[in-house]
Length: 463
RNA sequence: GGCGCGUUCAUCUAGCGGCUAGGAUACCGCCCUCUCAAGGCGGGUACACGGGUUCGAUUCCCGUACGCGCUACCA
Image (cartoon, rainbow, N blue to C red; front, side, top):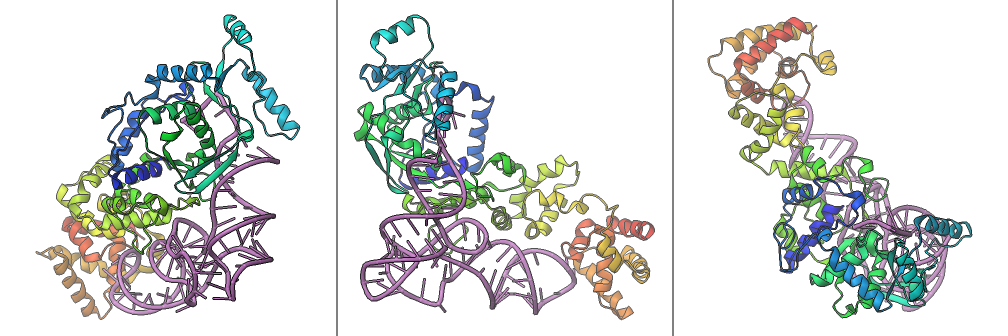
């Protein structure tokens, strides 16, 4: 989901010759994860999403990491209090919990009861002097209708009485998302905020904040993207399978394919084309072509698209991605050999991993054999013929798919049987499975000595 | 519960008052064929429901149902 959001921001910025800004919103100290930023940066780079301003590239409006900007937020919080737009709140989280429970029990929406909203200066001072921890809350005006225009959804309205007196500054001195976001968007001269739909109901709070700070005129435009959904239509989450971007990488998906696929989840340039280069996506991207309803992240179409991208590449291009996978599995083969395997398998795989997982027989002689094919093809008669063929193949001076085919077809003709009667058992004996690339090509790539030894092994061990 | 957003094939979607409702994935069948894959051809499946507005609604309006999101000192 985050990848898709980042992608749309990127596409929108590039389409409009704008500036794509990366800001690290790390204001929750309880959820800090070691290396998360580096991981994010790596992921974005892999996906081909670049930024013009941010923690690594810098920019006019830095720092781009919120935890380095706490002073700024505190100053604005103070300003808001001074202007009576916000107020300190000394309620403990225990009290807040009780209030919420009580309201829920009586059928009320669980909101803050605004207990500290009207504290006098003296009361505030006394509590501060006593060292009581406090937060800063937005003084939400009562009885107003807040309307804003969303670039995806049109006008959206909320009644201010349904909006909580949002916490802006936490008791640890860090801002919440709401304060930090508005302050930074303003200071960094953000023109467009493109984010997930889960933020839609927070937006009136943000509008109120812009007003309270006197910035409403320069408020950015909002675009709330439809959510990406699990197959059960709940918000896409890691709890239901591997959906972190790194997981797709390790599962052998090409970044271009993932990006292409994600781009088309919620956006469509409105013709029949499915495969889009990033340049085409940038050229076609318009916010008003973005859908309003959530999209199920379906794996089948991604698989298809990935196979399309794989097929569009040459063996040489695929080599550098496949080689490490082969190495990882301990398959010590020459580059030349691996290149040939890739050539034979390209149109049969859906992911990069399939090159090595799906066709292990290229790297290791089979010791187990597909039962279905065995039952069907491994007859006494077939074994007899394979023994003959083994002799013929061993005697062959040439070893190309053409020469192999000639030998096999000639033998079939001499026995007055169809070539299939030889091909199927032969495939089973050398690959252990009943399907795969054309047999003659397969035998050529495997090489003469490997083929003859595998046939011998099968003849001896396969009953 | 409250508030908000949404609703075209199983899935991703096209459609922006008049179409036999189009494409893609998946699925099924046929062709090709040594198998698989690819490719070619063909097939089935959708406008949530009820009211309006209109000569005419998938399209505009209202309601209902359903789904999802938010409702934290998380983002």
